Every structure is written in structure tokens, then in C-alpha cells.
Image (tube, rainbow, N blue to C red; front, side, top):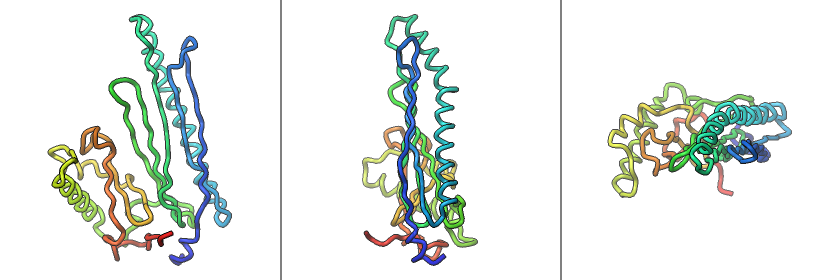
Length: 236
């Protein structure tokens, strides 16, 4: 499909949500909320419906996980709190999402935050890029032309950005970050933006908690002639 035609395919993305509160003896012990996208587009109605179903099923699975995995732990914690005469701890599970690209390709990331005790909770990030005209999810390698050593190029760029941020000061990475960048690199951990590609790492993999989810933005112009698609979107 021509670039001009692809960029005209702008879907409607509606945020939907589900919530659940689990109690023990009338006291809330787990609170869960899940926000997820519903995608519609008349031109590719069936493919858009498949994508929406994917996310609604994912939301249901996450709430099921909360009930099966977190709730028993919260109940045990509640019993211990009553026995010790301390205030019960409230467990939390929260999913939010962000649509970052919407022009033929729909790119979305979603964060799952969970708190089960301690100084703070933890966040895990997931992402998907969906090629609406063909109704399929794209892998990172699908963005690049054949035989492009994209992994090597991206790892080099990530390392360069880390070294640059360390040189400026204010950034904190583990001493063995070069090894960690390679070890924890995942081709599933990417999403598109209008002007570039974002690659991310999970918490604690290459940096301490204070750095959050380390994310590296690579402008499409740095990947010129390497990509299958012209992904740069015009200024609004």
C-alpha cells in the first residue's frame, strides 16, 4: 500500500475500563483497574474488531490473574495483620495504555502496575504494533528491509545514548550496563511514534528503580533506507 494511502488510515481508539474491589470482612484488600483500547475503522472493520477483541480478552485475563494470584496473597496478609493488630495492607493492580502511532499501523503500549507491599510497587510494560490493512501484528524485524543487521544497529544506538546521558550527569545505570543492554534486549519491547522508534527495558534490568522504564527514542531519519515503511508522519 502506498505511503499516502497508509497515512490516511486513522482509526478511532476509545478507552474502556473495568474495575474490581475484593474485600475481606468488609475491608478492601485488593483494588484493580484495567484500561484498554477499543479500535474501530470502517474500511477494515473485521481487522479492527480482531484487535479490539485481543485487548478486551487481555483485560479479562489480567483481572483473572489478580483474582487467582494477588487475592490469595492479600487474604493471607490480612490475616497476619489482624493477628498482629496492624492496619491491613491494600494490594493494588492497575493497567493503563497509550496509543502512540495511528496511521495504518496502530502502535500501543500498556503498563501494568502492581503493589503488594514494600516501599513502592512495580511496573511492567508491554506493547504491540498492528498492521491494520493485513490484520497482523508486526515484529521488530518486520519494520526493516531484508538482511539489515537491525539488532546490532539498535544496540549500538542504545549504548551511545546511555553513554551520552551519563556524560551529562543525572542518569544512573548499572556498571555493567553494556552487558545488560544486550542480555535484556527484547525485540518485543518497542513501539512507534510519529517521528521515531521507541525501545524500552523493564525495571531493574539495566538501571535502578529511580530510572523507571529506560526508554530510548531513535528518529526514523537515523534509520533512513533501512526501513520497509516510510513511518514519519507529517506535522499536524
